[in-house]
Length: 384
Image (cartoon, rainbow, N blue to C red; front, top):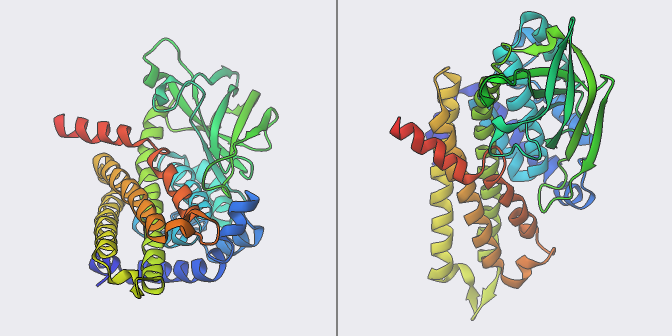
C-alpha cells in the first residue's frame, strides 16, 4: 500500500494527483534536463499548468480557482517535483506564498482584483521577503513603505525572489513603523510588476533548481495605492509567518517528490547494474540503502500530509509544518546522496539524471527557513 493510499485521500484529491502524475510523466520528466541546462522553463509547461487548472488549485471557486486545499496541493507538488523540481517550486510559490495569503488576508476588492488573474495564469505570483541583511532574521528587513496621501511609497531591494522575473504580482514586505520592535513595524503590500520603479536586477546562477528563476527585485520610489495594503498596517510580519507555514509544507512536498525520484532511479539501477555476476540489488549493502531511503521518505510524506490536513482545518500548524519541512528535506538529501552512491561513478556524470536530483535536493534544507530554523521553531513550540 502506498503512503498516499494510507492517507485516505478523497476522490477529488486523488484525481488531481493522478492528473499531476500524468503531467509529470509526459511533460516534465522529458524536459527536466533541458530546464536545468537552459536555466529556464519551457513556456509550454506554463501553458499546460494553466490548462490543467493548477495555477488556481487553492484559490476559491468564487474567484476562478479549483477551491482545493493544501492536501491537494501537497499531492500535486509531490508528483510535479518528482518530474522537475524547478517547475514544482514555481507552482508552490504561486499557490502557497501568493494566492494563499490574498485568500486568507485580502479584502473582497483585493480578491476580486487579483485572484481570478492568478487562477488563470494571466499573472504569476512572487513573494518578496528576503534581503541582504534579512534572511533567517526576516524581521530585520530594511525596505521601507512611507505613507504619502492615498499611496505608499516603497524603497528597497529584495533578494532570492522566486518567480521574480516572470511575476505579474509581488507581495512585498516593508517597514512602515521604525518606532516599534522590528517584527511589529512591518506591513505587506500587493505590488504589480507594471508599477513604475519596479525592476528586475541580478539573476542568481544556482547549484540546483536552475530552471526556476531567482532574482533581485529593486523598488525605487514605487507608489502603490493605500488599498494595496494586505492585512493590517504594521502587522505584516504575522502575514509573512502564517504564509511561511504553508510555504514550508510546499517545500516539504517538493523534498518528498525529489526523494521519490531518487528512490525510483536507485531501484531501477540496482536491478540493471551487474557486478560479480549478478545485479547489485542482490547485495545486502544496496538493499539496506533502499530500505532506509523508502522508510525515511514514507515518514516524511506522512508528516507533510499531516501538516497540510491541519492547515486545511484552519488549525495552527506551525510546529507540524516545521517538522514536515525538517524531516522531508533531510530525507530528500539522504535519498539523493544514497542514489548517487548506488550509481557510483556513472551517477557523478550527466549520463544519468541523478546528479541533477542531487543538486536539486540541497536547496530544500535552505529556503523557506533553513534546517536549524525549523529545529528552533519546533523546540520553542515544545517549550512554550
